[in-house]
Image (cartoon, rainbow, N blue to C red):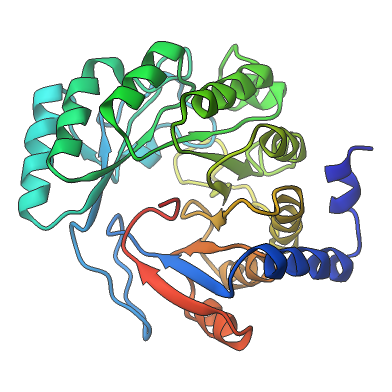
Length: 319
């Protein structure tokens, strides 16, 4: 049994207490609530502004993989910019609207990478406009990684997959978990700030590879570690799944905290809504996260009860 497996199966009370103790030891008593303008957020505690942080797709709604959990649905809410010229023009317009940062993403090619190479010069020019630039790469090769480094991007995001069956059967990729570890190591070698994302329940709502991924990230390192949760989407083969229960999310968050004691830990924006959302956030909070995207008002109140100073920020939870 691996260390991650051992920790995951501890009684929740023991696991949570250990994770909270680590959080108190290595992190100040504060939490950041990320509410970028990718979607509207308005509660008794905070209201975000439009165009402050934008999400851009370089491929529009196109993705070559047609993954079982997405089928391009996640691209529909992004602003399309399918040529370098369009990307630069959009960036200039966003700056005029008061935008401070952008997430550049898009659908993947058949190798699992977002086609970034034609856009590297335009990305560098976005940086010159004063924008903070976060790039979702998919699985990057060295040429792309070095180009992003030269462009001066603020951060790279990519989903870190720890299971070969998930790659084949969900993402339709002929790649291996070892290649994802190599990509993370490459980004670390180049000194690019990197925030790997681990998708809880990506294998049809079941755990498969998440604990292995946590151990690899712990070994290689990350600037920020993000946990997101499978959200069954209409129009996909996973639409009718029940999804992952809050306790499982809490347990994985606690394991992540214990394996990565000094690394900032975030509960990202991709996760289910509905009745279980607040409990999921509360368990993650108790397990030691430093950042939560789009928090439920109950989560804000719970943070206050726990003695955490909180601040709302209108950018990606990884920044």
